Image 1 (cartoon, rainbow, N blue to C red):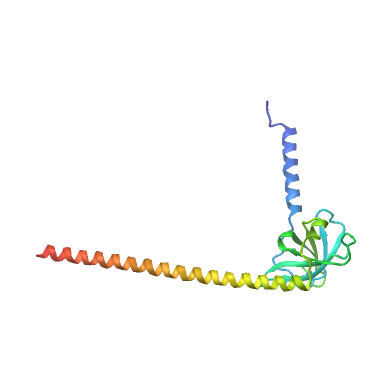
Image 2: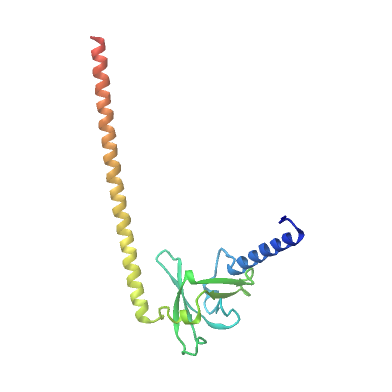
Length: 186
């Protein structure tokens, strides 16, 4: 049985093209640089229902390194549950840019990969959450710095001990070589 037929080639081409279309549409193209000013108030949609706006970006949350950690979205339109704000981490959204070559006309569209129900399970953006999150991030940052300092000290100690052993081995080899040379001349 021959698999290389016009029908098989056409089917294969269609499957490959379809797979490429799915992978391209599932990933937002990165832009390299984003405007926080334009990201604020950007419309928010879910992947499951990309035509229905569920809210807008209320705040942009950065860590100590000034990297984006999360967005706070205002869900005034979400499940008729009243106006609430939820924290959505960067792993759960993409940002699409429209009119990206013009600062005056640029618009963002945020697409969340969570269902509406899953969004309501995310932390609510409140003063209590803010206080606890800041404290947790500061503690994590402090522990990271302490861990890095401890690792550096351990590395320096290990390197120093290794250099001492190498130095002692070279000294012993030098002494043996000198003794052998003296013995050979006598």
